[in-house]
Structure formats: structure tokens, C-alpha cells
Length: 410
Image (tube, rainbow, N blue to C red):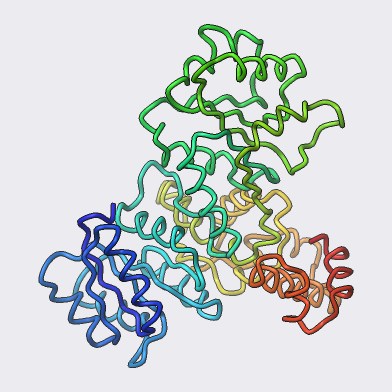
């Protein structure tokens, strides 16, 4: 945790540095704030007390965060680094993570998301639950919603396409909440058939989770009779378990009339939508690199070539890919690439062998469409989803932007 931690902040911007420093001190941390690369080297290499983490801007007046990190690595094992970067420096931050940096976050960011990221850096890998979903503004907004959801006891509905980490988000809410000391009863409705007693009986799942949380995965699969029983239980039980539910894209993939509107309203008192990776290309690249290191570490060393990472060409191909199955597809493609790669770096053909088999080469129209999609998504992220503001940023009319969004299924 941050309380009692000693953090070196390397930031030359007076306003941002003061804001971060003030918040970290409010959280109970001791902060050493330096504004130059040369001073950062001295503060980290010869500290007065052990340093638990370094928050470092990529761009500094007398050098770069990259130079600070690589210089330290030549003589010591540096504390975990959390790099703060602009959108234009994301590629550099990813390369630093390959070199051993702990994490990075892009400006501008929500302070809650920044603190979560820093806690993850200080605490290191825990039970395998990621502290973030990516580096985009959409990911930062989800982190903020998770933090706020953990502060309440109201039911939560996390919804989005398959493979977007909905279950992970739900478990994180429980872990951060006051009910974390109680059980998390996980019920996957895609895998088991429930009876009313299984869910709401004296020894049912809801009773088992009374002091903790009941996680209902794929809640849209509840039968009408089960929905009735759940509504009744929520009405008559004085202190039921907190319900955290996940569902497919919202409105849920059910035939009209199959899911009780009043139950949906009660389950979604805290509503967390999770967009697909095709709308978050920067998160796709970030997650791909993160997943690469995890999968590589879990594979028997004798079964794999000494792969260093993903090439820049592979990252660009991943950024342009739609990822229709999101994280599930990403994991499958990475496993295949790790088993078949021949060079030191994973190349586009390793991730997308079907392109080679089909003699695939994007047409100019396809390349233009991919570039337009990326630029529109970036503009919408920057304007927090306001189409009119995004149109002004892109210097097109609102009607033109709306038509392109319809065409690109955004």
C-alpha cells in the first residue's frame, strides 16, 4: 500500500508534479520530488532510505525517463518504475516495460486510476488479478468505476462482449470492497443449471455468500422462474449478499420479455459497460505485451524459442486488427505464436498466419479504413465520447463523423 511508502517523483511540470505529490502525501506516502534526470539518478541511486517506487515522466528538460531507467540498470537493480507518458510516447513506454519497467500510464489520467496503478507497482504481482485493463481513457474510466463500485454495497452489473475481462472486473470489485473478508461465491450460469433452492434456498449460493459477494456470471441466462425467485429473495432477505453480475452486450442478448425489467434495474444500480478491444486499439497492444510475458513465463523453457517480445510490426498489426473475440482470441493467437515463432521477435505472420496463407495484403481502401477507425476512436476518447467535440477535433461535420461511425460500426 502507499501508506508508509517512499516514492521518488520525477516530473518537471510544476502543476502536475504538485498535484501528484500532494495526493501521494495525503495517502500517507513520503515523496521525494525532483525535476531533472540528473537529480533523479542521485535520488534513486543513493537514497537516504529505501525507495519503494519511482513515478517518472518520459520527457524531462535535461534528458528522458528512458535514460534515467537504462542508466540505473547498468549499475543497480532499480526500484519498480511507473512511467507517465503522453500518447506519442506509448511505444517507448512499452519498450521500457520489455526492459524491466513495472508499468506506465498515459496523460491525462484519473487520479484514482493512477493510485491503483501505483499500488500494483509497489505490491507487485498478487493473485494474478490485473490492476488495470489498459492505458486508454476508456480503461481509466472503468478503473474509476470499479473503485467507486467497491465503495458501495449496491448491486453491480458489468456488461460487454465476451473476452473483455468482465469476470476479472467483478472479482476486483469484491477484492477492493469492505466485503473482501467475506466469501466470493462464483456461479457461472453458462456451465451449470441451477434450481431455485441452489440459488435461494437455506443452503443455497446466496446464503453461502451472505457476508460477502455473490458473483452471477452470464446473468442473462437465468430462467424466468429463477428471476422470480431472485427478486423474491432480494425483497425478503434483510441482509443479502451483495450481488455482482456480468452479462453480454447491453441490452442483454435475450429475447424481449425474457428478462424482468425490474430485476435488470435492481441488478444495474451500478452499471459498468466494457467496450470491445476494437474500440481500444492502444489497449489491445498493451494487453498483448502484458499477456506475452505472462504466457511466456508459464510455458516450459525447453518448449519455446528465446523470444524477446513482439516486433513493432506485430504491434501495428495488432492495433489494426478488430479482435472479434477480444482477450480470448488474443490468448489463443499468442500461444500459437510462442509455439511457432522462428526468430527473436514475434512478427505479424506469427500472430496472423491466415494472412500469409491467403496471400493477404491490405488494399489501400482497407488501410485507409483502419487508419480512420483509429483516428476516430482516439478523438472520441479525447473528448469523452462527445461526437460534436470529436467532429471539431477531426475537422469534419458532425453528420460526416456520425456516418463514418455507422459505417465502421463504432
